[in-house]
Length: 437
Image (cartoon, rainbow, N blue to C red; front, top):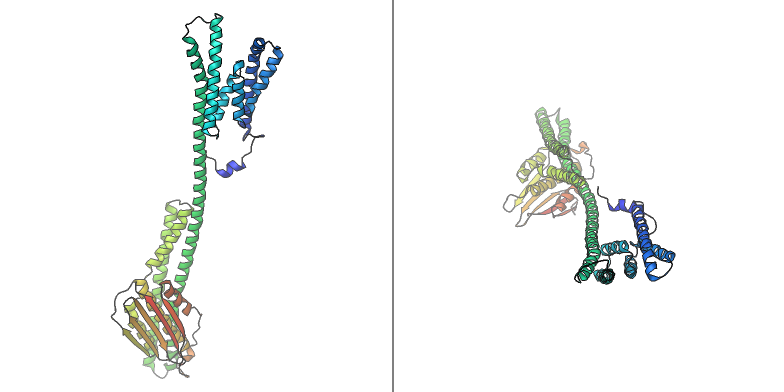
């Protein structure tokens, strides 16, 4: 079971310099065993040195107890073991001290120097001890055995703990590096998840704004024309029944067109939402995946939504003309195909501008100019001042104040320029230029 950086930081520590109580218990146990070993060996040392046995035991206990600080001062432990090597004691302390020194973070030159000192000291002591044993007759072997025994014992007491300590230290550093990388990766994933969620929220907001613009364009234009025709129908119902029937048919056609466009838009939204739910239920995604799926779904809805194009411009002008508006359409340059979003934006700008004329300047003559240029398409809708008395003035069309803002957002989103404002003659002008690529 892996442990994260926070869990290690909040884990209970041990006493003094130990990280854990288990480490403290291990070091205390090793120090006790080392003290007992040195105390036993101190008896022989006292006899050889001609000092009281009690003094040798106390010296051995004190020297062996130094092993308790092996994690904090490994150099001191190794130096003490080297110092008491001539007394032929502290073998356990020397082995454990070299292992701890090799596994520490100390420079390699210090580790190598102390290991070499320990090897030389052990080699000299064992050479003298084996030679003395042979001189006393305890060993009856050839002269070759003295250097062999000294070298074998010195290397056997020094090399294994040194190599094992180097391996454990390298492995410990590797594991710590892997933990740090895992913690860093976890933080990066959390940051990516937060950013993905922010992008998804931004995509949802953009989609809401786009849907609001589409709904405004569809409803405002169609319903405005329906209200104008209804007002005209009310005015001529008794005087001219045929014209009233014609206006009623136009109102019905526009209502059906508005419903069709609304159904298409809502159908795209439902299909996109259904796919997103299926994606979320099919695979248990992480936070990054869920946010990315939400952003992708919003993008799909925007891409799949079908809108009008410049080829529908004549029909748009005809609808306004049927509502009683005098519209003059002029086209400059050779018509060509543009990207769907460019054509849809150009159409919506003209549509919303005509809708505003119906709302605020009913009966005013309007000029619609469309220019196909080399690298852009330009459109302008300008109306003259409205007549003081208009048959459609009684329609009392409400205004939400979002039409011009929606047109500007559409044009600017494509890198174009949008300008609107009153003219010197008292009318109103809407102009937009959209890059063609």
